[in-house]
Image (cartoon, rainbow, N blue to C red; front, side, top):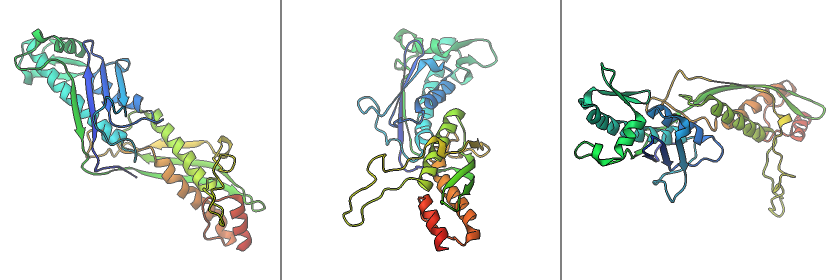
Length: 310
């Protein structure tokens, strides 16, 4: 799975006089937990509390131009734009901190939310520098007020995720019913910023992929072309009791080499791996009965007919 390259993403940051940060991104959150993950990136980069970070996505009235959310690209591309904007703020903060601390800019470091003069105990918290940035009398000559910054990130290439999925199931030969007994997945999604968010996205993707493999079908009447699965009474979504307990892990030994976060996509890993894993397990179970191929979704009727034909 490759997080989409070739399309840039934008991020704009505004820092208020108390050190609070607002981030405006061209991506869009619709259930993936972006507000949490993006806020963590910014809080870690600037050393500010999560409670002082506000994320605004997809509001075309206030955000810079962006490409949007698809292809598991938000963190790898949008998060990288956010990181670059934060880098600009840190650079401007160092210049201002050097002025306030009466030190050379090259001697000022930034870590753990504070600007410090190397080798001394002289330091200023990020909030103190932000406050000074909003008062013109505290600025060095030629510096504009505020710590606001904007950045664009255009990825050099795709950020490819990898994974290994395994499924155990059993089939009732009398009815063709498939029952999942267990599912295991290990995904290399690069740097994991929020393990709970990643696990939730993998679980959701697995449910979607298992639904595609066993249940979901867009069906049309052969004579009229009329859609006959247009409601959830007719379109079979997987339910909780259709799914086993998932065992999932992430492998972070191989971060992406060409974005500053080392992040790869995770949102579609379950949906990509599950159909193949489930279908392979079904065919493995049916192979002794002479079944070599079966069409998705693998409904009990299709299994029953395939056994009969074999």
